[in-house]
Length: 92
Picture: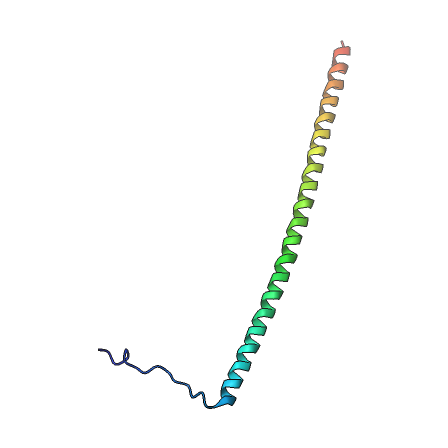
């Protein structure tokens, strides 16, 4: 067998309570920091979702207004064409 495969597992001396206590405190700080980061990311995600929703509403409003403008423009062109035809019909 390979010597590396038979290497002993790392062993920690648990009799030293100050080392264990400091490791636990370090892990607790790490967990708290990770939790705070997750909360911040969730808040940012919520804000971005609200902004996307607002932008979709604005886009829908602008699309509707654009359709109205295009329809009105089409009506004006038809009216101009009708008047031009009637003027041309009157002229000899």
